[in-house]
Image (cartoon, rainbow, N blue to C red; front, side):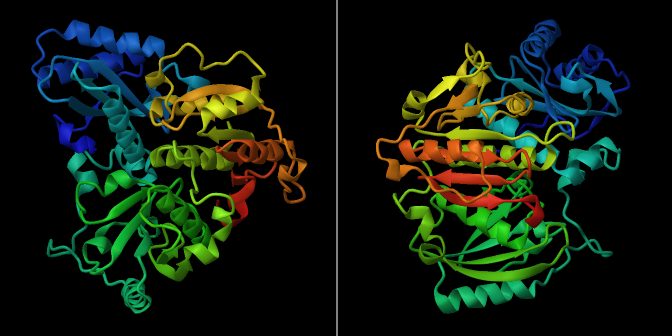
Length: 447
């Protein structure tokens, strides 16, 4: 779902006021006028009511303010900015530079709202896009999407010899698909000139940039752009498997490189069954059957952000347990009062960008997050107490890993859950399934 379809103005409003309520009032009034909404007061009151319940601040200087309104389409969207920052009463006194205001038709379901806001958040968290908006480098949304052109105003032809070689190699070995790690490139124009007669899977940290302009590709939302070539391949295949874009019997060709360096420098052929056999030691399914692929993508993204950034520069460690919640609940107990208890499911889903800051804040306390397959955060600050009827089931972990990793690995032995563990000492992210290490991402190799 692309938010561009619902924009009611291409112009980016400039907000002069740095007070939250006045800034929201400024945008809401202009939005209601543009959307031809006669009664402004109920819309603004709904915005404030939602802010009192939970801040619309989602990090990275972005707020997505929402309200229900009598509009014809499902959504109406307008973008505004204050380059100096708005005092937004956000956690840790963070300021807001970009406000995306979303009016919602009363008949729209919560899942669509979550999908749309996730699309908006992913797009504007892109560093280049975020900087372009907040530094007044652009004045319209169209400029963010405009294709790069040459001096004659024509689309430039981008030749990619490694992509041509990958195509020839894929034909020769009859590979199932070609995985391309698009964040290696600084722009997207090279993809418009790719002519490969194979399934193409695009791995990117910002899927939203592609959806309006490119068709015929499969997309996977990677957790982070700053990843080594080998790390990209690990993540790409893991997430492609979770989306059933490839299977364990397939051979794939991967094209990768260093993010942002504007040149591919690695081609790798991966026989998934042979190279990643440890994925399937006890089950043919890599991820728990009840976990949605987009939930795995989102939680893996959150984990890598926590591993790299910590919280206010301080390293933190935590555990995310995904799926098989009913069985997991029989192996846990609360260390603290569950901070997520009592909220509606729609208000505590990891796919909603509004919950990101909450999760990162609670990651500073001891315990794990228990997350259902649909993305609902069941609990936080949770103690994992896996039990093993047979001592031979206890996972043998690599030396140097402590109690947090032991608990994460253990819960995946006695249940069908997946655990994602962040090391407090190193920031390393480790994914466990069936007691085995599925994926390890460290700062040393670029996470």
